Length: 250
Image 1 (spheres, rainbow, N blue to C red):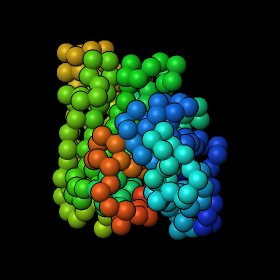
Image 2 (cartoon, rainbow, N blue to C red):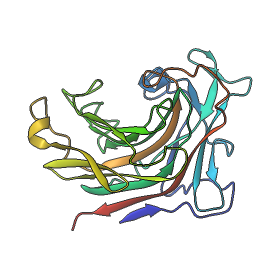
Image 3 (cartoon, rainbow, N blue to C red):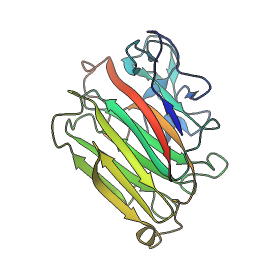
Image 4 (cartoon, rainbow, N blue to C red):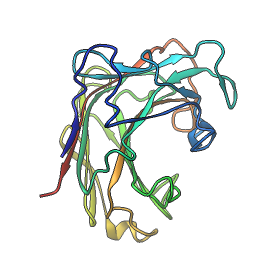
């Protein structure tokens, strides 16, 4: 029912009818460091986010140029984050993306969703489904998670998956979620690796499954998930997105 195949000339911006940019260090919206003590300054500059002319989106984390200020002082890194908030909410169904990631301790790429009520409905009540997160220090492992009221932050609903073959950086992998009011299921390369039921969720709090979500793609740097980079030799680091596709339930 919706997709972005990222077709277009090299250097082109993302389709503005489909995506919004989140910008700067989070202090004006979600909280400084985006609530996670992250160190990147999000930009919409083509050196941080652009089509590559080969049907893919590049999100590139770089060492920041002089002159940018962040909540912790001079910014250390720039990167990019885009969302479909206000432009596309995925109804219960399936959302998937084909992504190739970069390696490096301190990188934190993510493909995830927030409930349509955000930001009017505060997190975690709005609900969050993490389709794919990666600690850049772990080249063969990604994780998925469910966050909601009573099961947020260090959520009981999180699961790490080791790739059946290769690493996150040597090839593309397909990351997907399928959900309805009773279940949420997470897949890597079409292999189910984790599922949570509504009954399990309701042991902790109100279920957030029976609603649409908007989609988010970003490459964070530093923060609580994998720590701050101990070396800048990993930069520039590129997250390549071949497509994002949204399917409705039949």
